[in-house]
Length: 375
Image (tube, rainbow, N blue to C red):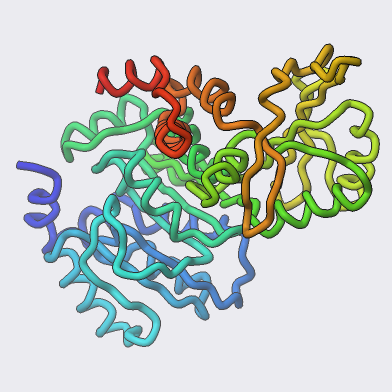
């Protein structure tokens, strides 16, 4: 018997026993209270894997002006949810339908908040987060209330045939889709039993838009600062289309121009948040946008002689972002730079390398072939 069949069998007593008796309602209320919204905000919320509406009702209790779109794969739980909506006279507040967290929804609407409450443990974590992340607005939030990966959590998991995940695993998967951890939540001691089982994460979606990239590029060009777009946006420039969202912008820049660049960034509220070396450091603003700087020094013969050792030919690329021509890392070297990281971040680099090789007729690197053959 799989978990869906178990939920179907338990639908009749799901609310009274599982949610209320074991304290899930109290936990949901507490986690929702930690969300960084005003109580009178007009929120658009997606409740993914909503069950009988535990988190939908917790949201409306805390944020009465919210509008909720909710879905679940289990028809029996949805039937119970529909009945509760009718009884509470909330048909104008909640829209529900049958859906799967790992499959695209029938619309492309984005939400201020996406919620998963004990859902991701039932599915492929990466596929679900990848799918649901596209429905979070830039600057929006994702609340994931899950089962702890401790002895008790794993015992609960064995009963319901679900997986539990380490804190590091959850954070890493969400960060792959530009969802950065804002808060990690544990229940107060007074909720002892639930505190042994439940935890929650609040993630914020941080994305730099193509318009922001072009505006930044143009502003630097106007003051005589030359940059080459690197990283994910460099891939997009070469392809002439955006493959995935990006929370940062990687750039290559001559060392002599770094002071002017810093002046521009500081004027826009950026501060240095990381320094890997004198030549590679990151500045970020209060929205979480990051500029990852890779500086170098040209020699007399036009080769890089110090700093990040870009081959001269790598700095000859051109591409297009949002209709604007930009200088970027050349396709051959972009593939060469990304290939060693395929094994670590396939969700970022596998499609990028494949698309670049196809467009520019470059042979697929060995790292790509090995990863594909392993699968």
